[in-house]
Length: 441
Image 1 (tube, rainbow, N blue to C red):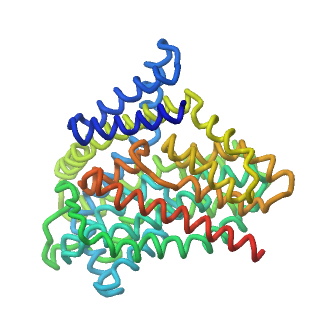
Image 2 (cartoon, rainbow, N blue to C red; image 1 turned 45 degrees about the horizontal axis):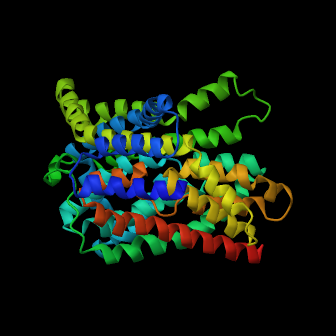
Image 3 (spheres, rainbow, N blue to C red; image 1 turned 90 degrees about the vertical axis):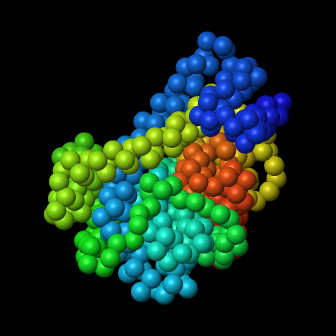
């Protein structure tokens, strides 16, 4: 019965947004409250669940999205994104831009959390689209697929790292196996699938695009790339620092504490924004008020996106509090199938209902831990199987679904045809890669 209620809630959400033209934030709040009632939550707990869901997701993403949008807008307005796009085209050729963006997405996606990488790469993607008149999703999808794979499968992202600890897997081996699985998943879901999306009329938000500048107006290649990728480089360096730091050092010690602070995405983006203010603003003759005006425009650009994401957090919290994810997992746990396939099915089912890849992965880990401790399956591959399942079928209850839709300004139907299919391809190819590896190692 709970699954039926969740299905009706999702259909109602789509109906409110698509046919009734209700703002997605209001639609999420209305559907979340109604679903909570139908699922039997105490009436006195419903408002708190909605508020907690909104607060949790905004608390996690607001600084990342706002500062990322500010950095991205400055990168665009200064001409740095255009310079990067020009350099990429010259290096790879216009006809191989999809492959260039896939490589860029993977490099940036390994150290960066998905939301950070998304808002940093989108202006570069838009610059390529605008300057060279390339189909938007043909260029964008390879980069987004690569970042999605990194988010679901590769440490140091939260879910894979937590799964490694839960299953007592080997972090290095998991990363190596994950990269082996990642490559075919990115190729199929990125450049190959992206070719089929040329007919979708994606219209990137005007505030995140810019008119092409003349060559002499553009900043240098080095400073453009260094500023745009500074967050990625800082996180990569701090991640390496955490690995090479003395193992005996206390987590609360000065060195470990500094590394933990410097590796926090919020701190990294704020520092990167300060650097960009100087490198692409003040040093290029702009006044501080002028740069702040750019940042204000960036806030206006992402305000609606933040509201939509906040609404999705309320819906996700209601589903978690109602125990739907646990019901699904328990129903599937008794199936007599390959443990890796079972892990993928359990995680994918939770992902479809809850929306969050991280929540789906960590919930599945608690259910499947006895399988790993019993020695029935390689712990490293179990991490990857769950990671692949956590990416399956992103739809209207996933904040990333709405980020993609709003940033690229496409309809819900086209988002399902492009984003949701891409995520499902990544998930299925990832599972197949894990199953093949299981037969080899």
